[in-house]
Image (tube, rainbow, N blue to C red; front, side, top):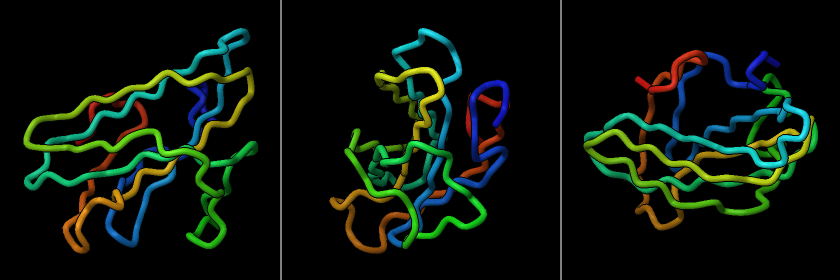
Length: 132
């Protein structure tokens, strides 16, 4: 875990297709925080695609080295559909949290997206707020 509360990924390739999703996780580290904000910034894409953002049921950090579809935490709630397009996209949502809570999310293709049309990837640097 980093000073900023990021557990994983560090500098990672974010990749989403019909069969691949990306899981990311954070730990709430401020005492008395009670409200956390999840900010998602997506780069422009050539072809609009509908992504789904889910909250996963995890209370401890997920081990990224052993993570697979079969052992990922179950989805608890769908937070929203996110549709990146020709312009950069910025999305955010407030969530309740307590100190030391582990917050785990999954970014995948929406069920509404037609088969084969969902394919997006970019590199996300841990210290950068804008993807690229």
